[in-house]
Image (tube, rainbow, N blue to C red; front, side):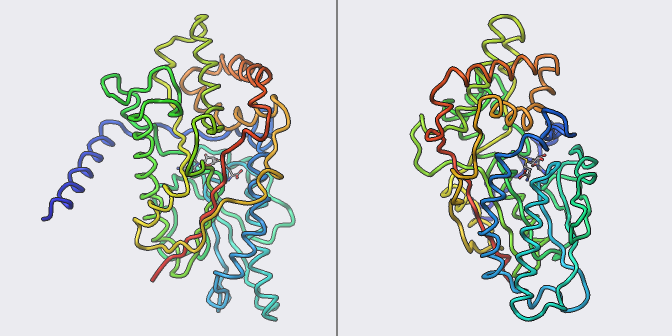
Length: 379
Ligand SMILES: C[S@@+](CC[C@H](N)C(=O)[O-])C[C@H]1O[C@@H](n2cnc3c(N)ncnc32)[C@H](O)[C@@H]1O
């Protein structure tokens, strides 16, 4: 066996050992329901991504999806949205996909052959599927089904789907890298809740976790897509070249971390508790993502670009909306570790810090990007 293979096998064994001794933590999901802090009410930012993606989806379905092979019999066409949360963004996304496919049939004069559709809505089992299903659009043109489970594993039968979509979800890691929680490791992330402005060992630990997760994600999707099937991914990311002060998304999480440290100083939480908390979120870059996709031999990259129109669509006009946007997405993670009692205090402090910062209120400082990748399942 060559050295390279031996090393890979050893690394796999190490990983299996690690997973055995540190089972995956319970997954956290967006705030459910339709209350004031819910994801359903506070995801206009993510909706901006779905809206900006509409034209791209139309274009790629016209140019890359072979509708002649989609449904030659009376079988329905199945599509999936991975990391759907509670809506309503997922409904807009799947409607855009279905309309784009229907346009293709009509443009070929095949109006009578437009197939029926089944949409699989996927998220963690603890996602509020009940709110999702209660708010399904009454005039939808598809049958709906929920598929609970992590998209880092298999979700669907082999070769069962021609189109899989995921928006604003793949930056969530399967877990916090174990090294950053280990006091004895050079990657111990003391005093921070994320990797921006952290030592390189911390950044590397996050990057390695993302690479492993992406590998698992692509292995699973390669099995589930039919040959020629498409995987359309919209992923929050950072540009390839960033100065430290450019990393707005990271800094936003840093600001939240600094609120926790302030609370530790006045005894509202223990410092050790802050030290042992890290967010399982990673922002890849175009080059980084391309490298990881190319490692998987089953996909060709048909398109990869920054989603246009972002600035127009991605607007969080005031500090309280900015705070609610973060709260709807992250409260679960924080509450699991620190308890529900400090959540109002934490996010109020965050709003106050944003109010006091001209940097955060200036949209020009917002340098994060939405990366669009269209992958095709090869033969
Ligand atoms: C920010 S929300 C995006 C929701 C929706 N796609 C949108 O654009 O509004 C990210 C979603 O991904 C889900 N998610 C994160 N990791 C996941 C995983 N491993 N498997 C399935 N869903 C996951 C979260 O639970 C959450 O609902």
